Length: 156
Ligand code: FES
Image 1 (cartoon, rainbow, N blue to C red):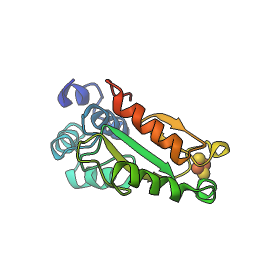
Image 2: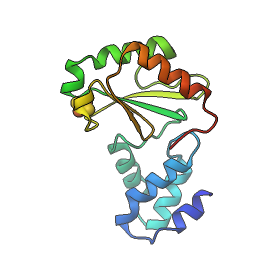
Image 3: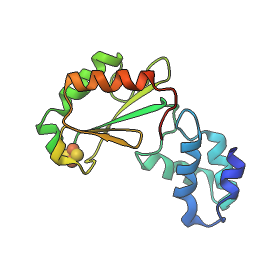
Image 4: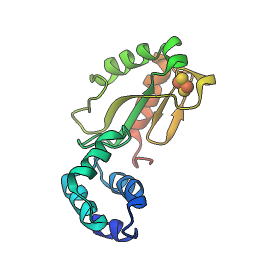
């Protein structure tokens, strides 16, 4: 679906801003909001482009830069932090060759840090797109990354 079709699916009310931005970002193969998509949204809602930029920049779930097909969000809230989330980020850096906030050169993985994912009982935890993983270890990370590399279709 192209971005005009997505935007046209929402009535031009300001309360639809976040749903529109989510839909546009989810539709982009590189999981981000392009300048063109923000301009089209501003036109549709009849609001200032700089205000749209402000909203998109405020929420950490939106990105204004291209990201990988798999967005790995490592929880860094207190429980996960106490149980080793920094070691998980270090292990991902070692396995993928990127630091938090970066994307692999093949465009497959982006690593980000996140607030509590709501699954503290299985800390340390992370999400890959919409799927959650807990009780992470270096070994389980290697298995997860290998599985993701071999999947043909990227899950949402
Ligand atoms: S603190 Fe990590 S899932 Fe809650």
